[in-house]
Length: 344
Image (cartoon, rainbow, N blue to C red; front, side, top):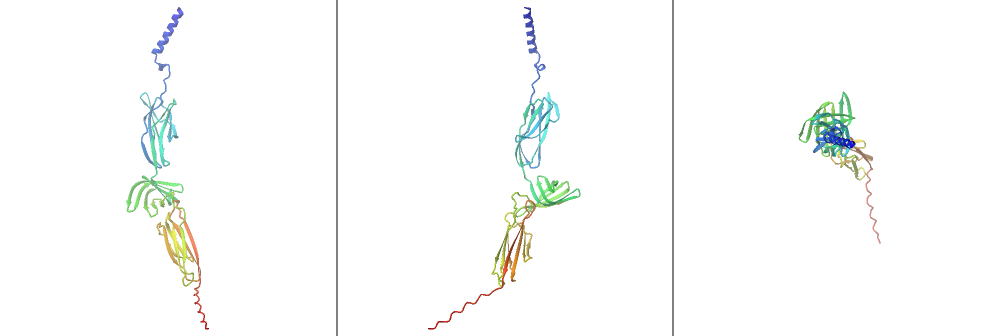
């Protein structure tokens, strides 16, 4: 009987302990996942080469944790949480990484956040469209950096508010101060690492050209085009004449470059220049006639043609020759005399 009473007392003590003592004092509190209180949102457009800051803020009962920045479902960056400040009965943490626009396309970007209790949460996604509105010109240029000159094939880029030039692994950047149009020419004035630069952009018949100059910088080039012509002009020389010194005839010359246009044509006859024009300004077809010398012997016509500057900063050249023989004029034989009449 005494043992039964003792068991009842122990059972009542256990019930009292479970009913009136807070479970948090005997059982560890369950961890809670981070709660994002300032999230990513919206749709935006970026110029290639620029960056976009991506700040978020979260609340958690832990002050430390990690994050990963995902682009189209792939983690591209990770790191630790930033400074944790007391907030309510936990902490407020800010994460501020960035997205870098390195290629054209549409990208879904969001964070995956994990606290020290291995509780995960994902932020909302921001949709970023990366576009390329730059005008990029390739040609020849010079940069003077720290009193050293770098010359050669160069690239000049114009984007929103920025001018950039590169030559031989050297580059310089200017901020656009003024941009205006003067008749058919667009003008950019910038200030930057090498003081001031002025850029002139003009649309030609077959392409768009840029000329730039300033303190320690010179540039001339043509807008870059992946489909630019990389073949030389075609040259056709046709002889039209009798081939003798009484009618030596002419050479008909036709030069074409239907993709990038022509910049220069030179014609030699027997080694002497008879025609030269280096101001063709990108015309697609050029024609010209040259008289064949009337002296007896062999005569050589040489035609050299260059097209406009291609996107790799070079020009293609084609040379064509034709040799024509001029003989002495031989008059035709008189017609034979009619036979004498037959007398029967």
